[in-house]
Amino acid sequence: MIVDYSDPLIVQEVSPRDGLQIEPGWVETADKIRLIDQLSQAGFSRIEAGSFVSPKAIPALRDGEQVFQGIRRRTGVIYVALIPNLKGAQRAVASGADELNLVLSASQTHNLANMRMRCEASLAAFGEVVSFASDYPVSLNGSIATTFGCPFEGKIDEDRVLHLVDAYLELGVQGITLADTTGMANPRQVRRLVNRVLQRVLVSDLTLHFHNTRGLGLCNVLAAYEAGARRFDAALGGLGGCPFAPGASGNICTEDLVNLCEEVGIPTGIDLPHLLQMSRQLPALLGHELPGQVVKAGRNSDLHPPPAYIATL
Image (cartoon, helix red, strand yellow):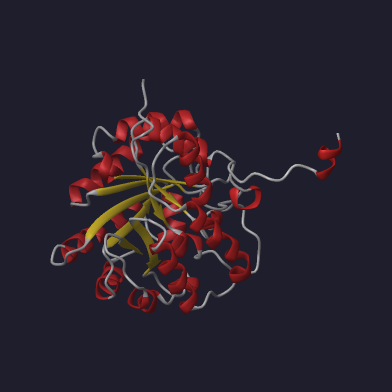
């Protein structure tokens, strides 16, 4: 198979939501808004700006309304909100979200831990969201967590994932995200499943969400891209993790992903120097170091002066 690496890759930035949800310290609302505004200037067409879940479940994101109402919206940028149910959808729409991201798990155990209900109950509740959203200019995306493996149940049957994709589509949810919630995916598995899902879903409606828990995040991006996927979630600095999944370390790092794309010639439209500048500010904001690599090592084009003693040789 010949892959055209000149085909653009779309990066959806998720650090304001998936990145911050697991942070132990409170990030001030003004700092969240400042982060999103800076991301809006970096060239992203899609930013997951927050969530409208119970404050008891995810206290780090309890200021969803204030964040969405405070950001400086940039023309052409879609601001996405994660919502768990009808109440969350109503709050998100009232706050001006452009897209609602619904989430259920391929694993019953993880869905019970995350949503406190079985997958079938989640789907039934999403029917109410679809009906409500039809009256507003908002799009819908359905995410499937633990697509590539569950920390409680292990391997997930691919046919199970396809069944959930079909269930979303039947509800009227157009966008689909396949999420590797705890970084259990491998490139061969990714390539195979993406090929199957793209027989049901348009390339423009499919997103892949990878974590780098076991070091395979960017390998899996390339495998999915080569299989035809073109949109990927990533988080500045490699922020993130799932509070309901043991061992779920950060998302793939946005600046590392954009650097990879630049190295192999895949256009993203993202300003990498701007991202690196932002990433360098994160440790001061969050109080700890981040796992991003390029921000530490620099780009290949960032050359260094030779040692002074060379001139004496």
